[in-house]
Length: 331
Image (tube, rainbow, N blue to C red; front, side, top):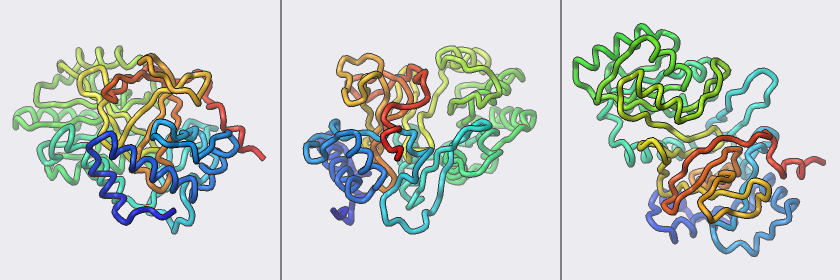
């Protein structure tokens, strides 16, 4: 099984369900042939690749394998990057081996333009202290590229210098500049408690995570608190993870929109082989076709529900951190 030479163009040119399905099935056959972790898991889990005829029938690899195995096609020369997840003491990190950084850059830049327009229309302020304090963050890589693409002299990262950020915000309000304030949840809460008031020029986007700095908040409660503190009508959110090369964005307070090459299904909580079709809560499966060389088909530990337009609503996470099926690989 050899990939078409123009597979990257095919992926980023998807506009229809049929085109998505064709690309997904091509990548599935490629993965079964060249990704030993995925192929072994499919065999041990009892799937029959020859019977897969629709993209929703493609088996999704439990995301835990990114912590225990090198999930990528073979052979792979030295990857251009290895993104790692954040973890508290004693936890094993996920590793995402990225063959071509250009794929990641194209994915997040085209997605940003699709939902927000050109990065050059914004001053981008990235408040990502927990990510900046370690190496290997895919979110920091994305934010850095967006900052460069913005071209605004005040676009920058901010670590713990919240007073400086507050001064920058006040200056940008005077300039009547459109601003994207991108931040991890606990840091945005810290900033909000300084009495920072924003206006309609600002788009506030939380990337999730208290990172052990605060207790976990329900997303609805977090967004309501930030709206009131920042004096804005809406809080946006980014749904992405170390193991993906694409993101979905929440802009209306309820549902995440995905680019055409990223789709979701929702599986039964106690039966991962069965998909829910009743628009009720289940485990989220992600089909990220930009993940050509790692694994495009991932069963996450997140819970959500999906509407008919491929819009996702997050509902929480599994109580048990271990996804069933991982122990199949233990020798």
